Image 1 (cartoon, rainbow, N blue to C red):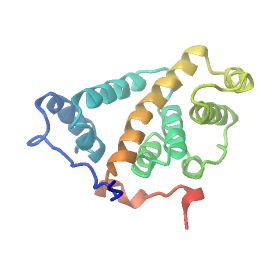
Image 2: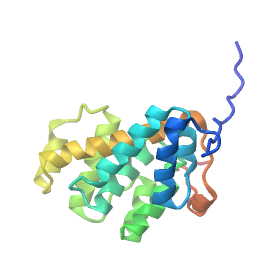
Image 3: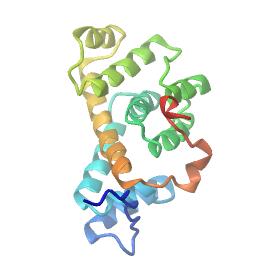
Length: 192
C-alpha cells in the first residue's frame, strides 16, 4: 500500500480541458476576469463544472441578498475548512458591502453583529454540522427572524454550491490564485 501524499490535481484551461467544459470556463472568465483554479480543477469532470456553475447562477437568482448569500457561502467555507474558498469569498463579501467586522467574524466562525444575519449563519452552520438533521428550534429561530421557508430551501442550494467547491478543493489541493493570496486563511482551531 502506497501512503504517499497525492499531488495536487492538474489545472486545466481552454487549451487542455475537455470540450464539454469549455463553455463553462468561458463563463467563469467572463464573470471573474480570469478562470479561478477551482474551475480549472473541476473542468476535468465537465458534469461537475456544469452543475457547479449552474447552481452558482441559480443561487445568485435566489431571494437572498448579496450579503446573505455570502453569509451562507462563508459559513460553509468555515465549517468545511476550505482554505481556497474563504479568501475568495472574503473578497466577494467585501464587494457585496458586508461590514468589515462581519467579514472577519465569518472568517473566525464567530457571531455576526445583526441578529437576523446571525440567525442565517447559525441555520447554515447547523445544516452543515448535522448533515441537514437540524434541531426544530434552529429552523424556528431562522423563520422567526424574518426568513421564509423558501429561503430555508435556498440556503440548501447555497450549501450545495459550497459542498461542490469545498470538497473539490479538499481532495484536489487546489492552489489559491494570486488574486486572492492577500486574503489567505487558516481555520482558527487548526492554526499552530
